[in-house]
Length: 84
Image (cartoon, rainbow, N blue to C red):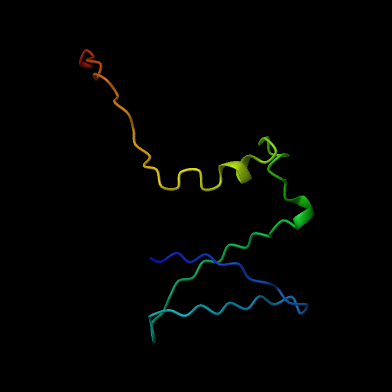
């Protein structure tokens, strides 16, 4: 099974046309289409409306560049009694 996600546009005629090239030919396929309307731009919330500090993404963009993100020492694993 192959899952393909794409965004398309319905024209004024109300018809959705999907052009999906596949590496298959001359075969029967079961195709499932899920239609989810995209929110208009005025309904999309800004980062500040979602609770982020103003300018957060601009300040942190590229913040890890040139650095290695490493997990520190985790200490000893707690030994627990076996479950019966």
